[in-house]
Amino acid sequence: MKTNFSKWLRILLGLFLIVYGLNQFFHFIPSTYGQMPENTRSFIDAVVEYLPYLYIFEILIGLFLLLNKWTAFIYIVLFPLSISFLMFTILNGDIHNMWPALIVALLNFGLMLDHKEQYKPLFD
Image (cartoon, rainbow, N blue to C red; front, side):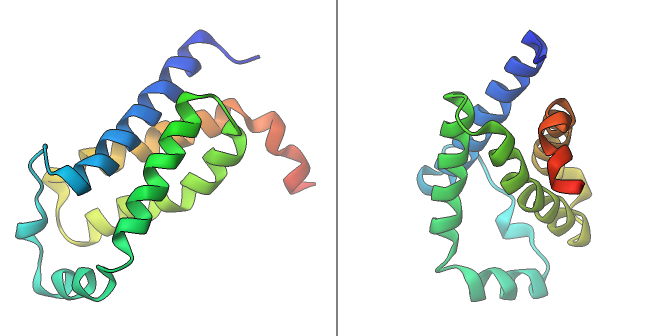
């Protein structure tokens, strides 16, 4: 049975994703994008046209979490994204600014554990 604590973690994760996604469009929170290594900047420049779609997807995921719709599915969809976000941050040597990626990955993993009974048919 889902606890009140997991409800608040779900809401926190949803809000975090919405705020982070909206920040990519409106720039109301300072970003560290200017401090990337050259090879990372080249990668971002190569995929920049796809990033708005990623941020819209991130906002939609956050909205689904706030509305408590399809949460077990959303956690599975978000898991590879959150791990990629965390790996991207660590591999860039941006350890001091990895807290957003770490928060998303830990919240996602913890909430997936809370839904582990729903995932059992996937691994039978």
